[in-house]
Structure formats: C-alpha cells, structure tokens
Image 1: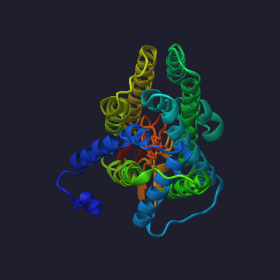
Image 2: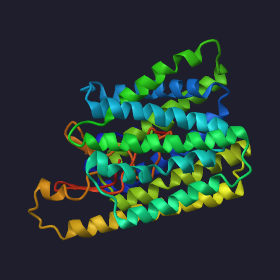
Image 3: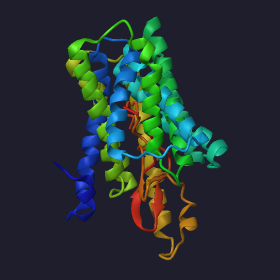
Image 4: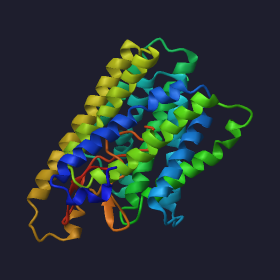
Length: 353
C-alpha cells in the first residue's frame, strides 16, 4: 500500500505526484456515471455518498479542528450546495451539461473575488467571463425538455456554489480548509436523511454509493492534497481537465446518453475558455515569481493571489481551478491565480465530485 507520507522522500516526488493527480482526476470523472447508475432520490444519493466520504476523511484526519468561523461554516454550506445540486442536475439533464456548467466556477470567482477577497478581475478575466457566458447560452439552444431545462439551471447553480466554496476556502488560507470539506459532507448527509426514508437503492445501489463515497469523493481529496505540493500550477490545471472531458464519456459508454450538439459546442467553449485563462494566469504568475528576489518575504509573495491553504503544518490546496468538486468532486475547487511559498513549489488554486 502506498504511504502518502513517504512521497516527500521519494526519488522523484514530482513524477509520483503527477501520477496521483491523474488518478485523482480519473476518479472525479466517475461522478456522472455513478450517480446516474443509482436508482434513488438525488438528494438521498448526495447524502449517502457524502456520509461515506466524511467517514473516510475523518479516519484520515483523526482530530479535525472545527473553529465554526464564518468562512468555515459558509464554505460548508457552499459545499452542500455544490454536491447536492450536482447530483440533482445529473438526474435532470445530461452528465455533460452538469459537469461542464459546474466547470464555470472560476468565472464566478472572478466576479465575486473583488468584493470577497479584494482581488479585482483583469481585462483577461472579463474576456474569459464573456466567452464563458456565450458558451453557457449555447446550452439552451438545444431542444430542451422541461426537466432538462431545469437541470441545466441547477447545474449552473452548482457551479456558482462551487465558486463560492473556493472563495471561502481561500479565506482560510492561514487555517485548515479540509475541516470545511468534512463539515460540508456531514451537513449534506444530515439534511438528506428525510429523502432516504421509506425507500432504498437496493444492494447494488449501496455498493455503487460506497464506491462513490470512497473513490469519487474521499480518497481523491487525500491524493490531491498530497500531490499538489509537488507539482506546478500549470501541471495541475492541465491534468484537471481530464475530469470534465471524461465524465460524459463514461456516461456515454455505460448508459448511452448523448448530449445535444449545441451543448457540446457550448461545453467546448466553456472548457477552452477556462483552461486557456487559467493556463495564462499560471504562466504569468510563474514569470512574476521568477523575478522576485530569493530573499523575498512571505508578504511579498502574497501579492500573487494565494490559492493554497494550510492543514496543520502542511500547506495544501483543496481543489484545482478547473476541476469542479461535484464534481462531485468534492474535490473543493479553484481560483484564477496560483500561490507561491518560499519553502514549497508553486501550486494551483483550490474546490466536490
């Protein structure tokens, strides 16, 4: 069994971390097909998998520190919205619509970052925002039924919650965001109890829920927070695009669900816009950091928007800028700018699957 604590002492921690990130993105991408394969109320599905994920994370952390601060509680509430709305959207519309629209979370971060974190959007941010809005509009050009139209709206709301989650996580850059994720999973499980009563997904459904909670939420977060310390921001951004690309592919192969042609075009626009903008931001931040003197203090590096948060003494990121948690990705999400520390390599921004 791989001991994640030994990665720092391995011969090539960067290579190992890249492999862990690829495994993380692959596990996140299973969210759509697993949710669609369980015949149960979507809120019940969301609660069951979050309850299982909470057990996995509590077993790993052992002694979580709940401060009940506004960012921690606010982030937990945003997490509930992210994973619950993602599960509902997957039942009402296609997996492609759900994941690609949740992938718009960095755009909401750019819009709200100035008010919440004092980080103003640049002209490049506004260009990306405009392009993504055009891509989102294309989703509605398909011949939507009443259910799929509602599902598309809910998917957009899930992306908004994911963006808010990232903002709350970044607000805790001097604390521990992993507790926010744990608290969010616990809250999701508790509010979903009424939807579980009087029905059951069956033995096959419970097996799929166990797989979802362990391998699509709990374990990916542990791998991600380990790997993110040894790879660059650009690496994480590019690797994270595996999730929104493969998510609808698995659903197509397993269930035969095909997204509409305009949704595919809109999804491509969203995916390309967010990825290019994030990559440009990462490269630009790398250039700025390279020009900093070696003796730069922590406050100097704070000028490059921080995207990582600290858990105990280890600095970790909860989610990549382009990787949506509902992702189910409970996988916590992402900002538009990477962070740099004088003692650690650069890393991407934070966010469910």
